Length: 494
Ligand SMILES: C[S@@+](CC[C@H](N)C(=O)[O-])C[C@H]1O[C@@H](n2cnc3c(N)ncnc32)[C@H](O)[C@@H]1O
Image 1: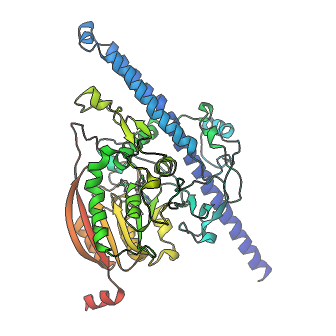
Image 2 (image 1 turned 120 degrees about the horizontal axis):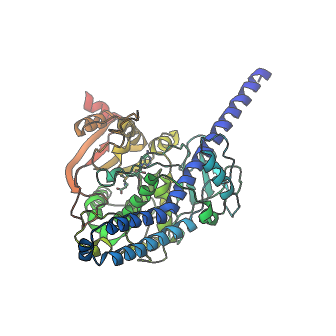
Image 3 (image 1 turned 90 degrees about the vertical axis):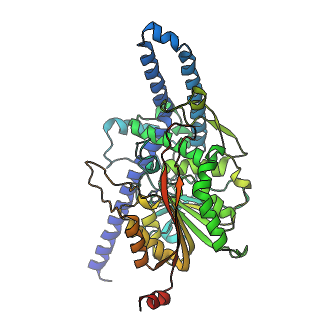
């Protein structure tokens, strides 16, 4: 190679390193914000209670007398908040950031204030596991240049998150796409309590902050209230995935998918189980159930809000009903009674480590498009299951194209969900959003080699309080499509 060529290559390498560093810095910033959102939860909830108290105080005495139980309700609310906070605190305590949270934040557009706080808050060191580039490990998060940490079967790579806030109307869209581009991979191994592990060093093996430092009230910085709303949204998602109360919703959404997988793969071999990918896996219950059914299942998720929580429940639950949360306290609307609103919910309803998962169960963090566009993913999966996922796309055609590409010939795509496009109607933000009708979605799928085998509509709720006077219902599209082989595709067009 000539000297000039050599210099060009070095410059390109340097540029790539700079780019990667920049992405990592943005991701650290995003993760700090998410941890802070969790830590802001108690104060934000207390502010709500104070607001209720102020309104109550403004009542004329005669009206107040009619609500003499209110002061004690406020105290009960405070106890519920502290129980929720206890759960959140335990969860954060168990979380080991997959990034070096103490790294230099220069170059980010943080406010000076945020900078100052972050800099001294996330500076100490803790134990960590080594991290490797996905491109060299060939593990599930194999985006070239992406980062993936961990060893063996227990790894998680990374992504970042931002989330919408519209609780009542767009509950289903509570977690929007990540801004970060790094990848995450969390793999779980069977029969161990620690099903999955989050690593905490950067690609140079640098040590991340001690996660306990994140929990110091002094390290927390204030985030906008919309971020705390995302935490409340996660609490509702916990009920959907990990509480008895969520069973009805799981029966509506997950059971049809599980029954379909069961009947389409009748003779599942223990030695060579079929593989199934669940993009947008949320808190991981569906992926876990598919694994228990006898599939090598991988969930993919790009929200740190979700991943912090799913990792905690999957890996750290010691028993069923270990924690009590109060998911419904944050809305005074549509309650039939105070006791409905303040009722406790025990989680988890099952003990994940004893649920009987199939070897190879994993959660892969990162943007679906980035992770599964990798050439190593072509023709890898026997089944892809999307549940309340396809409408999270900027470009749903791209999702369908990737699903087709990563399936084996004859592979199965099962979908259940609405078409509540997450980027639709984002007033003032020029987000790309391709919003196809169901008819067009099916036409596009046909173009990418899918054959529709079954189709129906399923009525379901999504993270809805079952005792609320308001129940948003979706009439979701449920289908099974099969990817035809090239030969069959050609035959069918002749
Ligand atoms: C509406 S939730 C559904 C979660 C779960 N499937 C369920 O049914 O409860 C959509 C999930 O997809 C995740 N998600 C959205 N866009 C994604 C992307 N591009 N890659 C990976 N996950 C994504 C969100 O973070 C969220 O957890």
